Length: 141
Image: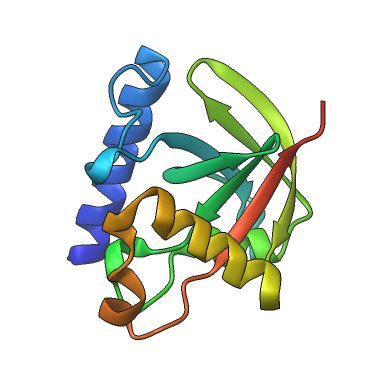
């Protein structure tokens, strides 16, 4: 039941974001900006779009797979591990991106930057009981 509600909420947020160019739905709780991420599913390849909070640095977007502190990581990060490219929408602008799921020191630095920028994300690792994965997506045009 919870999964269905989460999906319905994401679908509604995605529709609203797309139709308002992010004017509505372009910010998460705590003030972090939100983009739309579209990536193929790792099994069937069907495209999935989800709203994701981000930190922008040096032309790249860093996405934290917090799932609101849930124990299971979100499906979108699993899908990103299986694809080298995706698409994002920031406001009204859509762009193709290359995908890198960070590890080691790069992941640690990105997570530190994320929680320094948006302190409301700090408790998610402890709440989830897992290391929060970070994806770096970089526009390719």
